[in-house]
Amino acid sequence: MKTVKLRTVETRRFRVRIFYREPTYETRFGPRPDPHRWTYEVEAAGEDEAERLARARFRGDAESSWVGWVRQIVDVEVAEVR
Image (cartoon, rainbow, N blue to C red; front, top):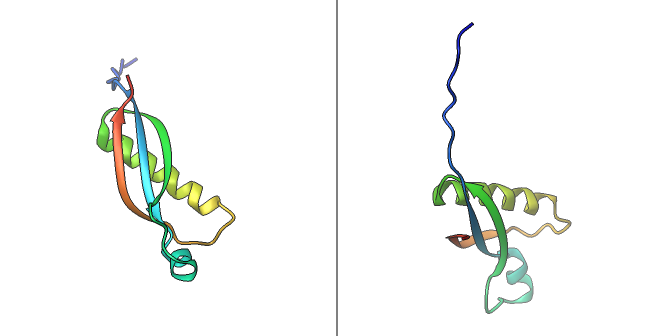
């Protein structure tokens, strides 16, 4: 029997803030002074992976919401949680 060694990846906890606008809504009802914000906490090997995971969750949350407004990401902040 062959033994396979698995490489373990150390993960850390990150807080990812996704700032977004709803251009369709703002065109109809007027611009908001500040963008909307959703915050996610994810486990990831690094900041790039944390952002990718949070963006994927954001897309899933946006698709499953009851409103039909387009959500346009305008900024992302990633910070390690200690």
